[in-house]
Structures are given as structure tokens and as C-alpha cells.
Image (cartoon, rainbow, N blue to C red; front, side):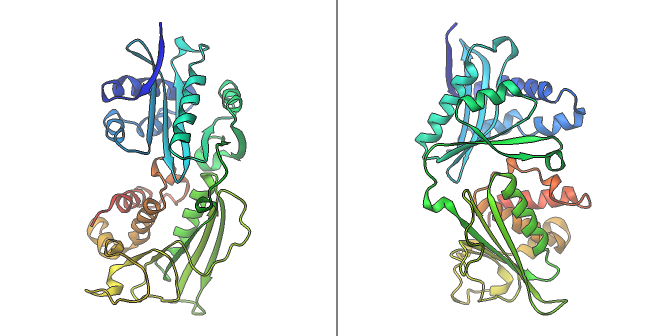
Length: 337
């Protein structure tokens, strides 16, 4: 029967998700059911259908006739094609379907201007890893089980040279002591590192031991970082209620109470849409100002184009308030004034 690759349609979502869930059961046969559900819950059929209209979504299916026999879930972010999952039904393996899906994915990435493709794989999956290497993917990092619960390998395939705009990004986070800037900075740096970025983090404190200001400078890049310091960031976040004009960024997210009711027309570049009442939202939505930094982190992840589907937040934060922290991040990520 003829094999054909096409974009995933809503009518095939249920069958594709069922195959995905079968693949998870295979890969994690020795894991607890709750661990398998963690992966399965990332792709409920209704959510998959909603994602299909996103221009960064690359969801492909391979079909024999009208039957879905393979799939590939990928997402484009900041010029990188991220392959999240690929699978072939057991009875249809060794027919070259995985090869064809990977070839089509790389073709789509190239057409959309991606400069590289990335994927995570398991060390024990030798056949899959051989397939990825056959298509030009090379192992660039090994992440042990402390981070994701299982050992995984990051593999990367270069498509073109890294464009200048993707070589290095600079972020500055500023706030007052007690606002969780340090926790947010370390979490963001870890997230970026686990996504295969080179990362440099500097924390700068005021002389005051308590009640002073703190800011964090983060540089991340797809290439080695030559200079981990900067005068102006690409994007900044200010949570302080008093603006620090020494914090420079091309684009800034600001705690709106620092600007009172009206814009002070200072030199800081912050569109009205990014003057956000972080503290007010934390109190209204989560009944406590301690979630200010998590709402802000979610907003920041959205701004820099990180797909939070790929992030295991449980490995970044202590167990206390873990669920609330994750909810606050998701709220900030999707927040619209």
C-alpha cells in the first residue's frame, strides 16, 4: 500500500494521539504509570487540534491509505526546528517510514528558515539513534537523570550557518531583595542550558545586605560565548517598584506600579502592553505576592520564544508550592492585558 506524508489534520488527531500514547508505553515500559501519564498528558487530542493552526507547528503523519502508521511532532522556535516526538507503529517498522518523516521535517525546517534541528533521545534507543545519526544529527550533550528523571541525549543537525541575530541573546532581570530574582535567574539559565544553549549568568547585588536591589545578567547563545558581560540587554525585566534607569535593554517588561497611572516618559523602552501589574496579578490570581517572579518568568519565556511544552519545571523548583509555581508560569506565559 502507498505510504504518504501529510500535515496532521483534525480528523486524524485521535488516531495519531493513540499511536503516540502507544509509543510512550513502549519507551517507558519500566516506568510507573504516573510517569507515563506525565508525557501522555502533554498531547491530549483537543490540544493537538488547537495547535495545528500555529505557523510554528510541524505535526506530520505518515499514512498507508487512510490509516495513520507514523507521526512526527515538531515545533519551530527562534530559528530552530525542535523534533519532540517521532514514532512508527510496530507492525509498520523497517519500511523506511522514519527516514521519510525525518527527511520531510528537515525540508520543512529549511523552508521556514531554520538554521538547525534539535531533538532529545534516550541512550538505550540504539536503532533510533542510528537513524538520527544517518540524517546528520550529532550528539552534543548528555543530560543525566537528575534533571528529567531519565538519561537523555541532545542531538543537533546543522542546516545553515547560525544567523547573527541568533548567535547571542542578552537578558537582564532586576528587582528588590525578596522578589525571587536569583531563583528566577537560575531557573531561566538552567532551562536554556537544557535546551542546548551556551549560557553565562552573573548576579549583581547592591551593597545593602537586606532590602537592596539585585539584578541578574544572562547571555545565551548557540555558539560559545566570548564575552559574558554587556551594557545593554536585548530584553529586560524590572520588578522593582522604583525604576532603575541604569538597567538598559532594547525592550523591557516592567512592573506597572513603578510607572504610576501614566507613563513617565523615561528613557526605558517599554510598550504599554509590557507594563504589567505583576504583583497585583499574583495577589488576585494566586492569593500571594510571592508568585510575582513566576508570573514574570512565564511572560519572559513567552517573549524570548521558549516553548514551555519542552520544559520540565519540576526539575527547576523545590517541591513546596511546585504546582502553584507552574500554574503561575503558565498564567504569565499566556497573559494578555
